[in-house]
Amino acid sequence: MMHCTTAAASKRILLVEDNRGECELLQEAIARQGFGESTVALHDAESALAVLQAQASSLHPTLPQLIILDLHLRDMTGIELIYRLRADARLPLIPVVMLTTSENPRDIRACYEAGASAYIVKPGTFEELSDLAHDLCRHWLHWNRIPDPVESRC
Image 1 (cartoon, rainbow, N blue to C red):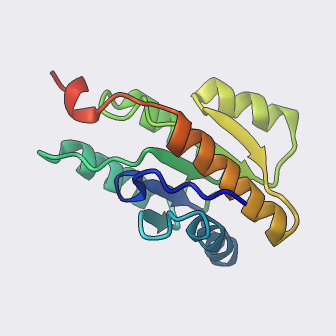
Image 2 (tube, rainbow, N blue to C red):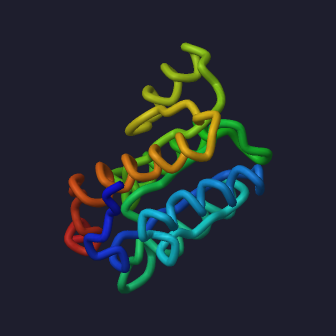
Protein backbone atom coordinates (compact mmCIF):
# COMPACT_ATOMS: atom_id res chain seq x y z
CA MET A 1 0.00 0.00 0.00
CA MET A 2 1.35 3.43 -0.94
CA HIS A 3 1.66 5.96 1.91
CA CYS A 4 1.07 9.72 1.70
CA THR A 5 4.45 11.14 2.67
CA THR A 6 4.47 14.48 0.88
CA ALA A 7 5.51 17.00 3.52
CA ALA A 8 3.32 15.45 6.20
CA ALA A 9 4.48 18.02 8.74
CA SER A 10 2.93 20.85 6.73
CA LYS A 11 -0.31 18.99 6.05
CA ARG A 12 -2.68 19.18 8.98
CA ILE A 13 -5.91 17.28 9.63
CA LEU A 14 -8.61 18.29 12.09
CA LEU A 15 -10.75 15.33 13.09
CA VAL A 16 -14.05 16.15 14.82
CA GLU A 17 -15.63 12.98 16.18
CA ASP A 18 -17.43 12.62 19.53
CA ASN A 19 -17.19 8.83 19.70
CA ARG A 20 -13.75 8.34 21.27
CA GLY A 21 -13.44 4.73 20.10
CA GLU A 22 -14.17 5.60 16.48
CA CYS A 23 -11.89 8.62 16.80
CA GLU A 24 -8.99 6.44 17.99
CA LEU A 25 -9.51 3.97 15.13
CA LEU A 26 -9.52 6.76 12.55
CA GLN A 27 -6.44 8.34 14.12
CA GLU A 28 -4.64 5.00 13.91
CA ALA A 29 -5.65 4.58 10.27
CA ILE A 30 -4.44 8.13 9.49
CA ALA A 31 -1.19 7.54 11.40
CA ARG A 32 -0.50 4.55 9.16
CA GLN A 33 -0.51 7.00 6.25
CA GLY A 34 2.18 9.14 7.86
CA PHE A 35 -0.08 11.88 9.24
CA GLY A 36 -0.38 10.83 12.88
CA GLU A 37 1.75 13.69 14.21
CA SER A 38 -0.19 16.30 12.24
CA THR A 39 -3.71 15.15 13.16
CA VAL A 40 -5.62 16.98 15.87
CA ALA A 41 -8.71 15.25 17.25
CA LEU A 42 -11.48 17.13 19.00
CA HIS A 43 -14.67 15.65 20.37
CA ASP A 44 -17.17 18.50 19.99
CA ALA A 45 -18.07 21.14 17.45
CA GLU A 46 -17.69 24.15 19.77
CA SER A 47 -14.07 23.21 20.52
CA ALA A 48 -13.37 22.72 16.83
CA LEU A 49 -14.86 26.10 15.97
CA ALA A 50 -12.89 27.82 18.76
CA VAL A 51 -9.61 26.22 17.64
CA LEU A 52 -10.19 27.11 13.99
CA GLN A 53 -11.11 30.70 14.79
CA ALA A 54 -8.04 31.09 17.02
CA GLN A 55 -5.80 29.62 14.33
CA ALA A 56 -7.33 31.88 11.68
CA SER A 57 -6.76 34.94 13.89
CA SER A 58 -3.11 34.08 14.44
CA LEU A 59 -0.34 36.10 12.81
CA HIS A 60 0.92 32.83 11.28
CA PRO A 61 -2.19 30.73 10.63
CA THR A 62 -1.82 26.98 11.08
CA LEU A 63 -5.17 26.02 9.67
CA PRO A 64 -5.77 22.40 8.73
CA GLN A 65 -5.60 21.28 5.12
CA LEU A 66 -8.55 18.97 5.79
CA ILE A 67 -11.39 18.70 8.29
CA ILE A 68 -12.94 15.27 8.81
CA LEU A 69 -16.28 15.82 10.50
CA ASP A 70 -18.90 13.51 11.97
CA LEU A 71 -22.52 14.39 11.26
CA HIS A 72 -23.91 13.53 14.69
CA LEU A 73 -22.11 15.46 17.43
CA ARG A 74 -23.40 16.09 20.93
CA ASP A 75 -23.30 19.89 20.99
CA MET A 76 -24.36 20.70 17.41
CA THR A 77 -24.70 18.77 14.19
CA GLY A 78 -21.91 18.61 11.66
CA ILE A 79 -24.22 20.49 9.31
CA GLU A 80 -24.48 23.40 11.76
CA LEU A 81 -20.70 23.45 12.13
CA ILE A 82 -20.21 23.56 8.35
CA TYR A 83 -22.58 26.53 8.07
CA ARG A 84 -20.58 28.33 10.75
CA LEU A 85 -17.27 27.54 9.06
CA ARG A 86 -18.51 28.65 5.66
CA ALA A 87 -19.87 31.90 7.16
CA ASP A 88 -16.45 32.84 8.58
CA ALA A 89 -14.53 34.72 5.89
CA ARG A 90 -11.26 33.17 7.12
CA LEU A 91 -12.38 29.54 6.92
CA PRO A 92 -14.61 28.86 3.90
CA LEU A 93 -12.03 27.16 1.68
CA ILE A 94 -10.87 24.38 4.00
CA PRO A 95 -12.16 21.08 2.62
CA VAL A 96 -14.67 19.42 4.95
CA VAL A 97 -15.24 15.70 4.52
CA MET A 98 -18.28 14.34 6.31
CA LEU A 99 -17.62 10.89 7.76
CA THR A 100 -20.76 9.39 9.23
CA THR A 101 -22.88 6.27 9.59
CA SER A 102 -25.92 7.92 7.99
CA GLU A 103 -26.94 6.89 4.51
CA ASN A 104 -30.04 9.06 4.66
CA PRO A 105 -30.42 10.99 1.36
CA ARG A 106 -31.68 14.05 3.30
CA ASP A 107 -28.48 14.10 5.38
CA ILE A 108 -26.34 13.78 2.26
CA ARG A 109 -28.17 16.64 0.53
CA ALA A 110 -28.10 18.84 3.66
CA CYS A 111 -24.35 18.37 4.08
CA TYR A 112 -23.61 19.33 0.49
CA GLU A 113 -25.98 22.29 0.71
CA ALA A 114 -24.17 23.45 3.84
CA GLY A 115 -20.85 23.34 1.99
CA ALA A 116 -19.37 19.89 2.60
CA SER A 117 -16.65 18.92 0.15
CA ALA A 118 -17.45 15.21 0.35
CA TYR A 119 -19.79 12.81 2.15
CA ILE A 120 -18.53 9.36 3.12
CA VAL A 121 -20.32 6.59 4.99
CA LYS A 122 -18.06 5.03 7.63
CA PRO A 123 -16.75 1.64 6.58
CA GLY A 124 -17.41 -1.47 8.64
CA THR A 125 -13.91 -2.85 9.16
CA PHE A 126 -10.54 -1.43 10.20
CA GLU A 127 -9.02 -2.63 6.92
CA GLU A 128 -11.61 -0.61 4.97
CA LEU A 129 -11.01 2.36 7.30
CA SER A 130 -7.29 2.12 6.55
CA ASP A 131 -8.03 2.07 2.83
CA LEU A 132 -10.27 5.10 3.29
CA ALA A 133 -7.57 6.95 5.25
CA HIS A 134 -5.14 6.22 2.43
CA ASP A 135 -7.55 7.58 -0.16
CA LEU A 136 -8.37 10.67 1.91
CA CYS A 137 -4.72 11.48 2.50
CA ARG A 138 -3.79 10.88 -1.09
CA HIS A 139 -6.61 13.00 -2.52
CA TRP A 140 -7.00 15.84 -0.01
CA LEU A 141 -3.41 16.18 1.23
CA HIS A 142 -1.33 15.10 -1.73
CA TRP A 143 -3.27 16.12 -4.84
CA ASN A 144 -5.71 18.78 -3.69
CA ARG A 145 -4.63 22.43 -3.38
CA ILE A 146 -6.22 25.19 -1.33
CA PRO A 147 -5.14 28.82 -1.13
CA ASP A 148 -2.66 29.84 1.55
CA PRO A 149 -4.67 31.51 4.37
CA VAL A 150 -2.01 34.23 4.67
CA GLU A 151 -2.41 35.15 1.00
CA SER A 152 -6.19 35.26 1.29
CA ARG A 153 -5.98 37.87 4.07
CA CYS A 154 -4.71 40.59 1.74
